[in-house]
Image 1 (cartoon, rainbow, N blue to C red):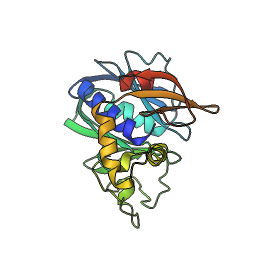
Image 2 (image 1 turned 90 degrees about the vertical axis):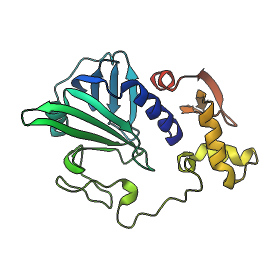
Image 3 (image 1 turned 60 degrees about the horizontal axis):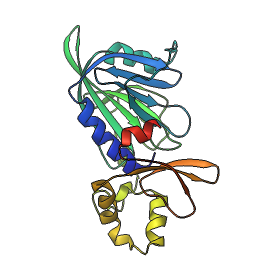
Length: 236
């Protein structure tokens, strides 16, 4: 799932689930599912390519989990109300903040999922501080429990993105290739991205043996299915 589709998905899901009650948390292998009054929000953390889904029911049978990260979430974020669901910065990072009533009163916990290909990770934060993590942080941040959380681009020595437009950083490589094929200059990439977001369409395409989800079919691919709704496209 590329950045521009993720932005569209998070914005639509935020409208669906913000303010809604989380009734339970379940685990399926390396997947984490928040069951809300509107449907199930699933984060798939296994493999190199993470992804998320939102559907009336995840349709899986819960398995016992030995991961401390999942156990911590079940204890501290198993019930509550969703305060916020956003992309907090210029990275493929999702932030889910939950308000819940604990023994000591109302608490606010945030799940941060870094959906970066090959660098999948997730953190539970309280007051901006790392409380628990999915796996050791091997980035330049070297985050550990007790540290203040930093986005990937805030790591020491990380380069600032060359952002010419508020959404230009979201454009994946294959869309930049299509821009070049269409003769669209790099300085217009922000306008190009905004145009896609104004009237979004989503396509499952086949390129060789691979199936990809994109907002624009491009040269050398076959369109398998087209969608007007990003949630339907992601769930297909």
